[in-house]
Length: 219
Image 1 (tube, rainbow, N blue to C red):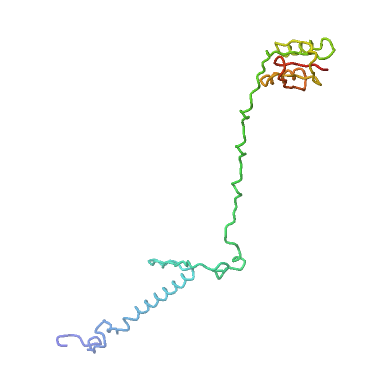
Image 2: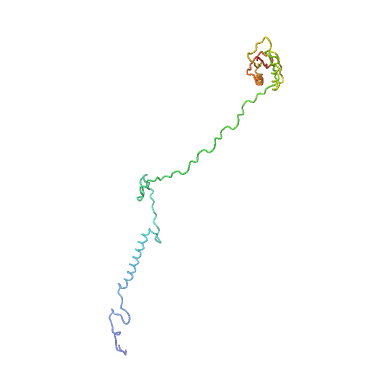
């Protein structure tokens, strides 16, 4: 080197293209520049595979950024008595699947019948009004004196107002037992009431009777 005051040393020696000049390193090859990236990619792939395997073993967790595929539910009916779950034990498959009633019947009758008659019949015949002013004759057909007078007193005490005592007419047929006679159907009620007041059992219709009601004392 002209004009260069110093002697040449190892740094001044001209080298070929495969050696670095001065303090610079030589040019690296393509493989030396690529293999570090390949190592990083392989390590990341191994880590990802390990994570996927671990999550899968934990029960299929949801991976961030993914949407789970819809699960198709089988609607195919199975024959009764055929277990559909392969893991179901015979004891479980024999259990009845229908719900048993748990409530007692609630439709039992709780009310008493309400259609029983509560009112007394109103169509009963009203009490017969007795005309105690009806003319009554008490006829003594016995030989006992004063027998008719005693019956007259009894009838007047019962409320009869038109009562007389007489002897039974001679020549007429007298009844076999003490009786109350009445002349017409319109006098029947009064005749029965007289018989009741005197305690006589026999009441007879006699159309030829003189007067409305007569009491014939035989004994």
